Amino acid sequence: MAGLCGAGLGGSVLPGAAGAALRRCGAAGSGRSLWKPVLLLLSPPAFSTTCARCGKDRRLRQKRAISERQLTRYFVDQRKVRVVGGQGGGGGHSFYSEPRKVFGGPDGGNGGDGGHVILKADQQMKSLSSVFPFYHGFHGERGGSKNCYGANGAHMYVKVPVGTLVKEDGKVVADLTQHGEEYIAAYGGAGGKGNRFFLSNENRAPKFFTPGEPGQERVLQLELKTTAHAGLVGFPNAGKSSLLRAISRAKPAVAAYPFTTLNPHVGIVHYQDFEQVAVADIPGLIKGAHQNRGLGMAFLKHIERCRFLLYVVDLSVPQPWIQLQDLKYELEAYEKGLSERPCVVIGNKIDLAQSRINLPLLREQVAERVIALSALTGDNLEELLLHLRELYDIYVKTGQSPVKW
Image (cartoon, rainbow, N blue to C red; front, side):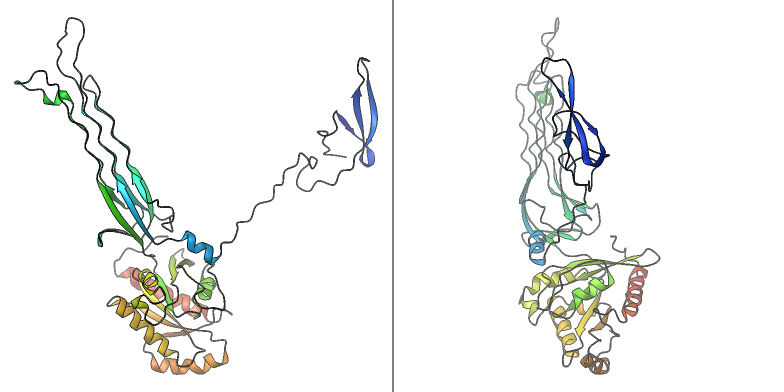
């Protein structure tokens, strides 16, 4: 039997027929060895050529699915951070001395500067959950003798998602919208001066030096606004998450109850010419969202960076054009001019009988282009993808730099 292991038999094993084997036992003080038959009851190896005791399970572990409620703990779009720059190193205090040159003069070097605390935008980061509430820069080293300067403290880099807004006392001080963009949140303190710095004709042997300066201390508010080309805007249960699952590989939660999506999800639509269009699924809005009803302010801020909007309305409800009017009113009340961005109206759930009746009525009431489709069955998704590419090409022709994913 090939692949047997003798780790648990207490001696060497020779394979035999039908699961039988011989165990070699050494007789104490006899100088000779005896072979005794041993019956091995082994199951056929599944993932290893050794026995069950020595084998290892080589199956790939599947990634555990994260529910929408668990994702709420991981997705953080606001964070208060206290940052303190590193303190500068103190100046050195020493005098040069060697044989036949006892009074060589002062040679204390300057201290090193403290390290900065720098916020750096990284496209791999998707949430502020990994940002700690406190950061402190590294200190500079003290100046040494022989006019040696102290080493500068290393900078502390804090990675934040692209689209992070930095505020201080309610005022915007930085907007990190590009990958690799940096902002110095707190400057490190300057290094102190050694006694060599104070050498002059009036004072040939200065004995005083200055300590390093403390680093800058600030309290900042970080706010994440999702960056995407297009944004899916609609009321709860309009089918936004189902539509995003149909046109991309994103997997937002889908259920029959409202407010299934609690956090924005971004899906990437791939085209044959290797162009990528990012589509954001904004959580459902309700009437009075601009007054922060139903966490409206937390949802509306993610629409600000969308270049064009996709209004998703439920065709199966009576008078679906009322939904579009309410959505535009909420956007305009939140930020003037937000509802005037390039847009298209998507009539979802066309597979229902009532939706086919309301479709011509919706087109009579709405001046924008209406694309009727079904995110459940996939009907007419091609028209949406083609028009989405047209909106993207128009946006790129305006000379603005497209968002990279």
